[in-house]
Length: 335
Length: 298
Image 1 (cartoon, rainbow over the protein chains, first blue to last red):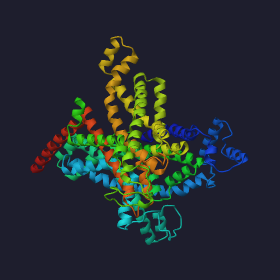
Image 2 (cartoon, rainbow over the protein chains, first blue to last red):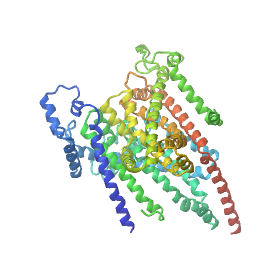
Image 3 (cartoon, rainbow over the protein chains, first blue to last red):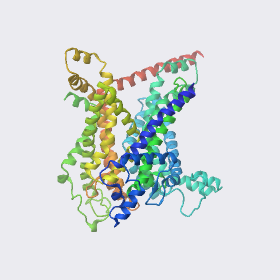
Image 4 (spheres, chains in turn brown, red):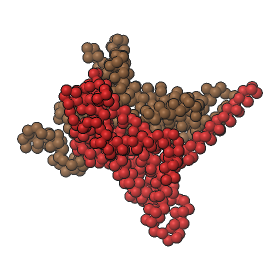
């Protein structure tokens, strides 16, 4: 029963995914200017070169045909060829995606490690000095531009204290065989513990930059939903049963309080991906975000289009996962 | 007037209102306040640390950071306020129409907003700006094309709720046309929530603008903006900390004040948000009493 519901939910995401693909396709076409001219910029080109690029990008065909070709390509896993880097877009994305996933997972980990204890303590001591400082701190975190915070961290931990490196995923002198593309896993597979440590150190500052900003949002939500749940009858009942306080808080209250937090995580996922772009740019992290930013400046239209679509599809998928996790956390909600 | 008094009734409310006023005055009277011209370069004075002459130091072209920071307030405030004015008006009207009349048009717009929401804001805006080119009008356009969605969703939800109320029925029974009922009765009632969201969005758009200018696709480089100033300091971070730090602090203080003001407005317009918390606290202590008594009994 629950499985069919889950399947229905997955199926309902399909039209959204198609819509997202169509919108990503339309996105750059509705902007003023001829994409080919924008791409070629001021360089001296012959009409023949313009025509051949236009033909290569299918821009000489009617819009509806272009769209059909684009969607058919997406289904085949063919996102076109980057004319700047002269490589298939799928390969470019596959090369950079692991770095971004690694950074995103580290970011979420940092955010949870900060927000969970802070949010719970803040809710338990609502109105106290601790609570007030948490709320003020969270508001500062929400108001702070992530890229500026990243620069401050570089200033403090890299320039002054010389504790962490400021760019890349691993020291330039180290060679690690690429197996999975995940630096932490690859260094372990190579049984190179020193490289693993170096890779971990490279991860610290970018993950903290975005993790702290994200934790500010998350801590506020966890605090608010913990407050809500703590006043519920089942918590009173659990306490009345004589359960230990931590068991009441963790097993009974927190489990229910996590549901709103999960929703926010899903909704904030887009912000997280966007923030990743900036952080990857600052820390020269060779991920998808940096690829997109450099492609935008190189006017590499094909890569931008594919990446915009990929980001949006990731957002749709993330919210699908969040919906599925609902059931795990709260058996009363059936999908 | 009553609202303003309520707004500044708490210390945080009055401080944030004062800070915002100060920034607005600073932006308006920038030519009178700034000790130097924002573009006045002085190659003999490159990368000077903060001193009596240059309070916040100078950048790599010898420009005075304090003066540029004062001028930078103009860009941030203008972008924030103009973008919110456009997105709030468009989104609220569309949302109210959708929530009131519903129907096919509402369903189509609803689906479309779901799609728009799937695109991360920053990526959406960077992508657009890269092809539109830096510029004030382009920036407002890139931010507005997606920014109206939150206002639309808020207004639609609120209107759906309001449309069931008795006063709407009364207005209709008195022979008012639908359009008049909507614009004269319903929309004024959903405005408070829009004002709260609008305030918070001013800060959000400012941070977005700074992010885009930081990447070089926001405000053109010849206009002083905090985002591009922070970016200028990136290259000299190791030798001149003040170039990036100062404009970032200016932005942080302003956005913080705006967010505090937004929260204060929320408390005024939605008093439940505060009393609810108080109620919870009472409940909690009651629960604690129950626990302690049972523990004693055990």
